[in-house]
Image (cartoon, each protein chain N blue to C red):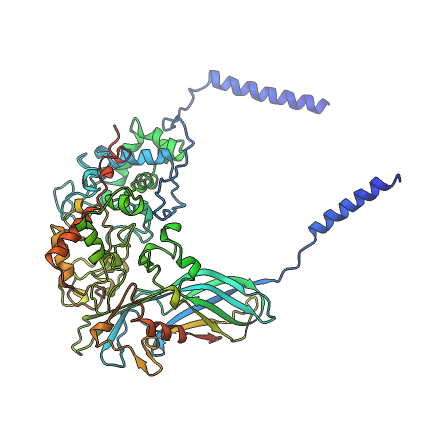
Length: 253
Length: 372
């Protein structure tokens, strides 16, 4: 009995020692994810490039942007997806912009079987107002239509020369978005993340393939089809569907 | 023990020598630049209505009560900022005109026109995209440096400004209170413009009729105002083929100006290289940015004539006529400048709506007025 206090003290000390034991965690490494925008398979040059359009005419693209929600990488062992970001806005809007824009995340080293994201603003955030956030947050009023129509998920803006006279005088402005259009984009492609050996992931979006593909071309000669804004998203639905289907993932290229 | 005694004795000797020197030696050196007074600034939280986003934080220039007050004094002080004591920031940013000056181009102390119109200073705390018409200053406090030196504005020399501030009866203590400086020599250009920026960040305009109707539910639009809002300003359901996406496309609420840079089609030039004022292009060096200027806020727009970066439009009617007429088909023109039909009834309604963006309380708010 006289050793009981000593015994209890020993337990306490051992307990303390346990608390200090290192917790087993996976080592982490930087993962750089590139987003590249193309036009007809070539890196897009905002304003600087002149691009032929399938239904006639030429384009100068002034703006291409889209929201990415719940960007995740998927562990090969089937464990829970690793969230890289809740919301991000990928944008090309200046002639000085490189066709590739990069994000870097800290993630556990290991093997992965793919990547996925929501194209657009996920419903729980699309229900929030810009005033819920800071003025310099990606969900700001410049990307917001209004109380009914909510955030603009993607924008494609360009000026077209339809007459071949060298004057880019036909404005094209496609602003797309609604909860109904929110789409999950998934890539089932294996890659490995280890320190010092970035797998070289590039998500590629081709503006032309959003406007024209799968046997359909958005006819920009039709004045009725040069602007999509606000609540009437049915007009732009097929642009959206092509946009959401055309993403591809390049690995190690 | 003996060592301890020696040590204490030695300390006593040093103390005695030290005292002796003070009493019997040369007169003490007095630091004439030392500043007395409080030196612990009080953090200040901006009062932002819940229908506004949170302001952009500048970690390099946190707001303090003393910094804001110092900035307000300098903002209104003609003696300090201009070389001839005739102008201050407030000369071109007049509170009764929503901090503009009513001129197409601002006029400096030499009575010469500057290059551009004075921008309103309201709601700068919510601007994430650089300052000035061309975005040439990435941070607000940097913006205040150039006007002091510009011969078409205050035409002063920062060394002279600092000399006045350092030898002033009042400012050194205010700088100490705002920034904790100990000596007049520590009053710098950077602290001066940071104080001005702190004051400017407090100028929040959020009490217009629009705010009362839409956010507070304490007022009503007239029929014309409502028509202006619904027919052309906020067009949420744009029918196919409608050319005009709504003014709110670039001037969305609650800021009514997205601070982006656009060629809004006002300049009729043959090519991108022919803009006299290159705007953003003058900053980036890219010809594709020539002719692009900031989309400013429309809050208090009825008070801030004339319009555009060079004040070319004297009235809002002229502005609406420009947009209805479309632009000039240049390749970097914003694609949403398309031209659209505008009836006289619609124009009157739109003007009525724009009038609801005037914040009368801003014009007399003593927090933003010249200190007494």
